[in-house]
Image (cartoon, rainbow over all chains, first blue to last red; front, side):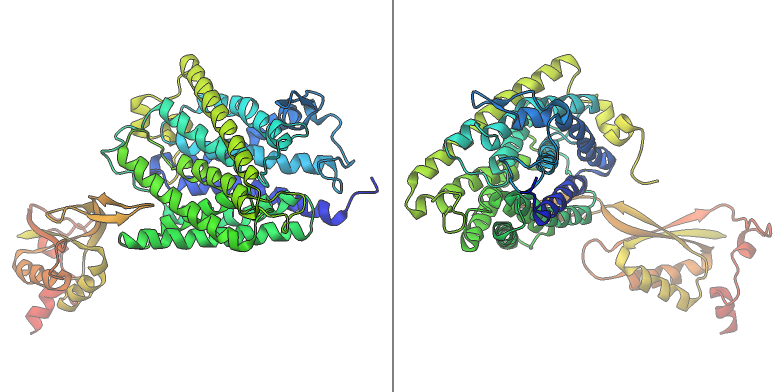
Length: 407
Length: 126
């Protein structure tokens, strides 16, 4: 254990705490956007995820994602119950205990399915939510995490770059959200009634805490307290700033600079820089964040305009497309001058990297869509995905939890 | 005889309406926060990527019960204080009241509605 660095370990543990806070932050980010009768329900979908995956990761998740490789597709079962994961360092992070790495990674495993909850708020049956979350984490997140980050994982082997989870977290969550929204169907009155956010200050609070937590998400992904962690923190902040300003301008052109829009832009910028945070320059981060915001802005407008799928809280438009753009942009802007352990992208003379990024994204998208569709259909057949119409009208706070937000 | 005024107006005008009513000696009142719409039909608010229609807007409903002979002056005072000239200024309704009873004293009707330095005492004094 001579290789353990106190500084590195401290930073990764603090980063784990920062990333943990992102899930309750997400609860408020989403909770503020639903109607008042579903506020507690929406908060709970994120909060309960901490507990659900907090157990799932210890029991099987970590082992499936980071256990010894099987065919590039999945980890072994050798670390069930975190067996053999302790104070000794590993090849994943040579200067911190393997258990610190596992704990840090647990927080990613928690927030990823929590992101999906934005697709089915205001109509999901709570028991169906629990089943879906556990199955999705085990059958979608853990394998894709292994492909991209696990030693021997197929996407890692072909050289796909994903610094902090553009593919593992945001593409899987975003495309799964769209798929799930299509299976569960729209909220009652979608397209006719106005779904006014019950508390935009909660959304602002949530976005602010997400922004802070993202320093741990991306900065901590350096797995050391070093220059690369610092670089990732700076690119993260830069991209979020650019995206906030772009969204502000786009909404201003239509009337007024929307607060809800600006904080949404911030999150999209954070999503977009996630895969490239430790591979691209701060100037590239401005482009990645700014273009990401424009993509998501027009995607939401297009999706909401067509009213075919009730993508309720725009998880696909923000995380799916933001993550896809970020993954591809990493193939454009990555440079070894930032991170010698990375690769050069298209703009640095290596067009092959763009193709690798595209292949990785396509694989994650295809797998996420197919598996989410299957899991959702099965749960729908067994227990039903939706609450009854009457419950939906009363609101999930009362119908699913027997509680209300305000007396 | 007594009457009830139900005045529904912009929430931001409550301070001015109260001040104007105190100035003419209206002492008793209560008010609610209500939502609704009339001809104005609501407003557009800004969303993530565009606007959406909000049809029920917050308003204040102020209730005053008073003697018939004070109604005309009170209604005109409310109207002037709550007026902006734009759609959404609100409405004033006047209803007959069949009985008023003050719980503490058991006084009824006109007596129950009299206060120190209220609109009637001021008019008599003048």
